[in-house]
Picture 1 (cartoon, protein in one colour):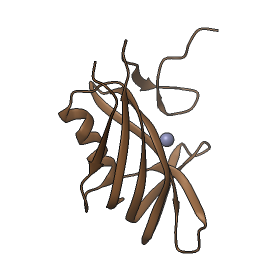
Picture 2 (cartoon, rainbow, N blue to C red):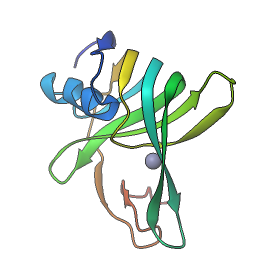
Picture 3 (cartoon, rainbow, N blue to C red):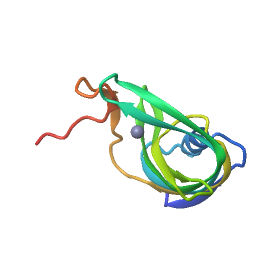
Length: 138
Ligand code: ZN
């Protein structure tokens, strides 16, 4: 298993895509990570449990990545990154949600902790309508 590492993600790239590329290129199927930095626009998602759809909200400003954290597991036979993010603009007001495609990196520093053991596999969950890990037996 690989040691924890720090990596700078490339300017101008899509944040979610760039993070996924790191895990695929280094063949890391299970990990936890966090990212700080700044974005040139961001797309947040909010999962509406009634409609079972993600509501999207796009921000076009220059934004601080106050916090971004997530995990890596398996979905549809491949490496899947799930990330949530809190952003702040010039007024210091924070917005947060599920990180969607369409967030452009200005600067991004990622800390990755590869994890040992069996990789959780996501599958459709009837109760939530989401692709989730198997639930532990109580
Ligand atoms: Zn999410």
